[in-house]
Amino acid sequence: MFHKGPGGSFISPYGLVITTKEPPDCYSLMQNPFHSIRQQYTRGTLSEEQVDRDPVKQLELWIKEAMEAECPEPTAMILSTTGTDLRPSSRVVLMKGLDEHGITFFTNYDSRKGHQLASNPYASLLFFWPDLERQVRIEGTVERVSKMESDNYYDSRPEQSRISAAVSPQSQEISSRRWLEEEIKAQGSRLEAQVKAQGSRFKAQGKDEGVSIERPENWGGYRLIPEYFEFWQGGADRLHDRIIYIWTGSDWRIARLAP
Ligand SMILES: Cc1cc2nc3c(=O)[nH]c(=O)nc-3n(C[C@H](O)[C@H](O)[C@H](O)COP(=O)(O)O)c2cc1C
Image (cartoon, rainbow, N blue to C red; front, side, top):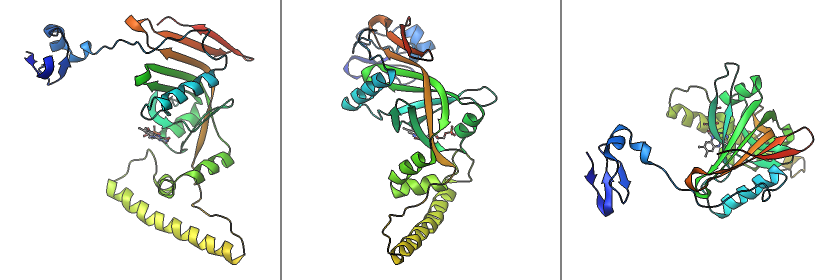
């Protein structure tokens, strides 16, 4: 049964604290305490007239607004892929580029997602900013970015993350955390020594080119080329706004979906 908790709250048999004015419906909460978790969305509305004709610009605007609102991880997106078995698999990656060519993220090409994308380039991305009551769904095909783009981004990363990216066999089973730490230490010193040697060679040749740990061939960027966008803004009483963009081959068709 429920116990009274502090400040007018109720504590469920599972220890879940429920803050409500009314005593909770004990029967349904006993069955499933998650049924009562429900929020009214009142932050805003979205209309066909109000959105930018270009979905990339609309997405840019929403990301900027998420940054201004100090949403945690405003550029984090859920990437879903499937391999030849057609079983979807999802994980978070960080958006590192957005323009008319698509949406870019960086990862290990030999990871699970890398193998899945090699056998099926169709993928989806999802942004969710709970504080703004907004989500954006994007679907399209994925391709690798140029080696130069991957080099540029890799070189911009702090040295420790360059080492981690170079050393970690992403998505493979490893024996222990200790193995990883030792591998990072050993390989990290080897890579740093290489860089130092290269730097002194350049100096001896009178060059002052900056040298850094080189990007491994199996690490780099992907770009999702979008064909479909959905901008979702939470509405009161479940009357959410859903504005979609469909690529027709020459321009974007805008429409509304029922919530
Ligand atoms: C906030 C956040 C950001 C992340 N960013 C990246 C990223 O940009 N690239 C990446 O490869 N993994 C990133 N990860 C880790 C992935 O979610 C995932 O664990 C990893 O890419 C391996 O996925 P896979 O085995 O499906 O290939 C991030 C995780 C979180 C929670």
